[in-house]
Image (cartoon, rainbow, N blue to C red; front, side, top):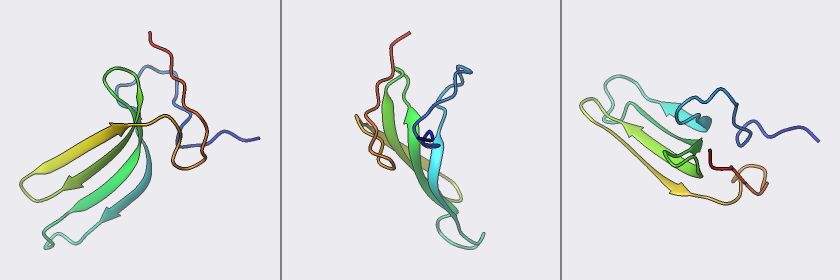
Length: 81
């Protein structure tokens, strides 16, 4: 069985290693420049589902802790350091 590219985080220790499953870029004249989502580790090293929006003068992101990968259904168990 192959590893899911969205929920198998690398071991480089990088901060918020996000695996994007969707990013849409719009034309520069649009009100929204980009919108996307992905699986990431939060500041407490817990898996979360993150979403973000980028507009000309502001960006917004948010996330929710999750226990299963939304793409493959694997239970996510990330150990604390």
